[in-house]
Length: 112
Length: 110
Image 1 (tube, rainbow over the protein chains, first blue to last red):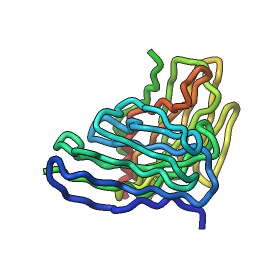
Image 2 (image 1 turned 135 degrees about the vertical axis):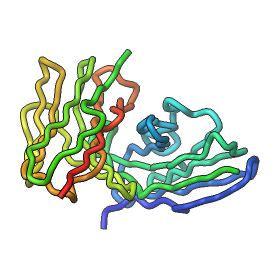
Image 3 (image 1 turned 90 degrees about the vertical axis):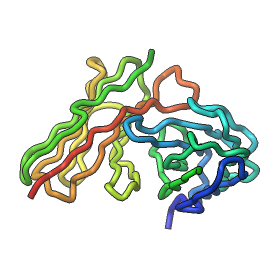
């Protein structure tokens, strides 16, 4: 089954404790991206990747890191989480950025 | 500034009504996307279109490139259509990014 998986689905952590949210797709897609969604603000892109080892900042990259060492995986790293990073996070993939987007199920993060 | 504006922000209707959600944008685009976000949070793509009209079941999406406007129609609406509908565009001079609308929250009452 074609899908984008994210783990964990729910995470409660404390300020400053490094965490990683994993994202994996099995569709051989070139383009992958991370979004955060906050009430009233819609989807905002954090980082995106056009291929292995090619990543770029989206609209709200501060406080986040990503890597794309393999085509299928695109982890999101919060080196020192802060409460303003409490949000719903989505990973998405597509053949290319203009093409149909496939979203993961989302990760709800609470930073205390 | 490149923007995508959706209207209305919120829409409540009775079951069976014909629904229209609008999306306007300000730049030349290569494609426009309509997505649905379920109350549980999951997001699925409904349509990707660059011209004309597409239909899938009770959903119809149209786009007018000259007017920079797209509409999503739902015929014979049902409570299970209750969701947030999101418009996004890939624009001609973009830096490999989509521009996202804020979404339209639709509630269909039985």
